[in-house]
Each structure stands twice: as structure tokens, then as C-alpha cells.
Image (cartoon, rainbow, N blue to C red; front, side, top):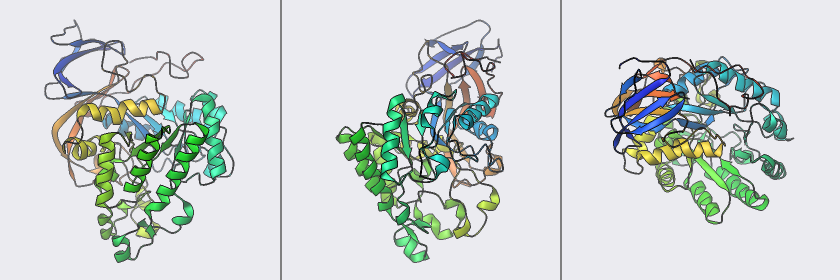
Length: 455
């Protein structure tokens, strides 16, 4: 790498979206030019031969734990992991302590993200006060706050009351928001420990039936159709759920859905080990479900990949299965798992990858400057990926505080070589470089729509 002036980078010979090799010139936070044989005096030149250039990834579903659970993760550590994983924006879920159910808390999360500077942190607001499912939270106040919240979710628990869910869907229409539902009928999953099926019967663990997820999705797509609102379904995990979403879309319901990397690869057979690293909500399902999820992501029935990155302290995972917390880390392995399950299998190309990991999640979250085409004049949120790289997952070497990766010890393909956030390289040569520095927040730039300071 040749070093030149700060703020100008010439990426040479990258395969744009996996296509023909071209050059990208980044200057002052924007893509200044794209084409063959570009040159720019004083630019930092990056040889990208053999690398794929993609828009920065956007995670619609991340748990950063802060405020209140800094023993599990902080905004700083979680966003470092995100940058290394190729993300330039993440949506931080509301189940922090205190819950992000007021304008004050979501603004705190926004400020923590700005202070860290690794990615754009967009807070998700809770649907109900304290995630208790009894009273709507301050949806309008969070939407009007500096955080400009547009995604609302009680993820971790289901908004099981249909009247409350209807009211939430009606309310968010006023500011083009979306309710992201954790689909789990609580009465059907009381005491559940894993997927209900052959393996749960053999192991003697209380089963978690597919219908607990599918019944809520069926109810909610009908509610969304009735009120004419946007619904997003978190972490779809069953073949039946896929069919319900497909049916809803065929009827014109404004519904989107996500799948996690772990549900694209892992099955409930792994639970035979009783290793709590495989305990997750919703649970790992069957191979039939895995194949249905992959096909649905490929054909657009499932819109996006969301990591559901859920770090936990080691003592919450290194214990008996019944007592272990549910959740898996995912920010630093998502790209590799999706390449392994979707691209290397021929189900999807890199342009499709950009659609499900960047463009569409940015649209769902209403992030105007993310998921944009790699064209002149667009924000320079760009990643470079080496698809030929192979690496073995070692949780102890990850930036996240969570060591609960279900892929520990696995060899996976694909590695992020560089991440550019607003034109600044947060990751270079596969290593953290330096964070982006925002200007001090003012009335003009607090919403994140104005230009911010650069290193």
C-alpha cells in the first residue's frame, strides 16, 4: 500500500459487486470516480486485485447491550466487531438496561455510537414500556428525537397482545416507522429448551414448536394488511414461516423478513452435544428448515440477513443447558457464513449479497446514506472482501466481548480486508485502523443527515 494524503483513497482493480475489475476513487467521504485506469495525485493507493468491492453492510438486528449490560458488550466493542465484519451501520436493539423505550435512552445510544466512531449506530426503540407488553412506549417521542428512530421492536419477547400490536402498527404509520416482531407465542413455548422434534424427544428437552413462530407471523401479517402499515419479521426460522411470508407478499402486504446466519447453516442436531453455545431464540431447526430458509433468501421471500448478534458473559453460557442464556455472536462471522451457504453454493451472487446485507436493510431502517450504489457522488461506505481467504473461527481473537460463537473451530471462507465508513478506513489489511470522528453534535447535524468531521 502506498500512503498519500488523508481523505483520498484510490482502490485499484476491485471486482465491483463481483463483476469486472474497476477502480474506485474516494475523496472527502464520497465516491469521486469509478472506472478503469483512474489516477489521483497524493491518493493512498490500495491494490484490490482479487478483491470484491461491496457497499458497507447494514445489520438490522444487533444487540450492543449498553447501557446497563457492559459486562456482556459495549457500544465500543460491539461496533469494533461490526467494522471488522464489514458493517458500516447497525441497528441496536432495545433490550438494554434501562430499556430503550424513551427519547433519552435512544439518544444516549446514538451518542455512544458517535463517540465510538466505528459504524453508524441507529437505535431501535422498544414497542412497549419496559418490554412488558402492557403499554405502548414513547414511539412518537423516539421518532422525533435526535436518534430519529424508525425501527421499533421488543425483540427478546413477543408483542403477544393483538390489540397492542395493532395499535403499534397504526402508530408508526405517522412517521413511516416499522414494527419488528419477535414472533413467539409465549403460551406455546413455556419452558421450551430447543426445537420440538425428533432430537428434543430423544434428549428429553421441552420442545419449541414451529407453530409458536408461525401463528404470530400469520396474525401479524393480517394486522399489517388491515391497518396498512409496515411489518418486519425478525429471525424467521421455519419452513412454515417462509410460506406464510410468501403468501402475505403475494397479497401485497407490506412485510419484510430476516434470517440469521446461524439459521442458514446450523441445525438442531448440534444440540445432541448439550453445548449451550447452540442455545438460541428462536432455536436451531431441522435441515429441511435450513434449506427452505436458503431458498427463500435467494428468491426474495426473505429480504435480509440480520445477525441477531447476542453476546453474553462466559458464565451465562458455560453452565447447564437449562440455565444457559439464549443467543450467539455473529457480527464478525456473518459475511463468511453467508458466502459459505449462499454464494459458494450457487444460490446467490455478490450483487444479491449486497441486496440482502446492505441495500434492503438500509431501506427497511430508512437509512438514506447507507446501502447506496458504488457510483460517483454516493457516500463512500465501502468494503473490500477477499472471497478466496479461508480462516478458522477463534472467539478469543474477536473484537466482541462475547465468546459465544457457534462457529468456533470451523473453517469459513471470505474475509473483510478493508472497511470504509464515510470515506474513512476503519479497517485496513483486515485490522482495525482508526475510528471516524464526528463533529460535535449540533441542531444541524444531530440527526446524522449532515456532513460530519473526518480524521
